[in-house]
Length: 357
Image (cartoon, rainbow, N blue to C red):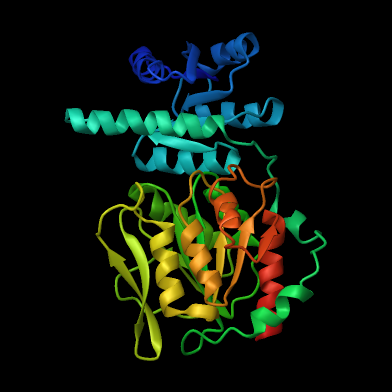
């Protein structure tokens, strides 16, 4: 049973979320609080498994409360966010500060929209209940980490062919729950730019542009939202938009990004599997596949296909994952050459890329 505390200054929002969650046999809403000070006392009283937390509240804002909570009593938190520019920025701050996920506040216009929104609320809270909270780790720490032996991977890695003109490797990355912070940490320490990156992260469209801008500020790669027909070049990172699939296509001796409006794949658009399958078809053993933290199995089959071409593949390990769902499934399918801690992935790949250049 997942015990949930709802924290929001709107009683109507509290009652709506409570009504939605209380329909589920495995979820128990223990109480709600109208501000962080009240929430602090009710956390002590109920010891909840998950908190839903409003971004904007009186007396103390949600982000400040979240940071205090993660320092003193870490637990899974799902932020309730608006789609305003301020709400988007604060939500991304919250994900960097330890929130496992977020819900966008909506006013559904139809019964179908309402049903889908309620399903999303339940899904997010249930995923949070299965999340392992990790201590925040600064990028500098990873530079002191002793890497595992890479000798067993070097020969396979060297066999990979350049995927296109001027690109040593194409690194394909997929992530979901916990992915924004995992991607930030990984890209901060990725110091080999003789490759290009394509990335599929499950996140609503309105959040993708500012998220890409944040990654761009901390990464040696130039990160941006992929554009349809855009040529892929070394030192660049191309992120799938929040409402389209990203795939790779050949164009003469080069590779280009293509954006597709096709149906969601198992509820996702962008889908990691759609991206990975195109990478397997077009790039083959010139690719590197990386599957990070996330709930479900999106990307597991695609990563397996990438590995079957002779490409090198990595999944994030259970200990460092917020949710070891997608990486675990890929590992079970035989899709991973290696299982690395998040702090090892970027330094290991950087070392292998430099040796293969």
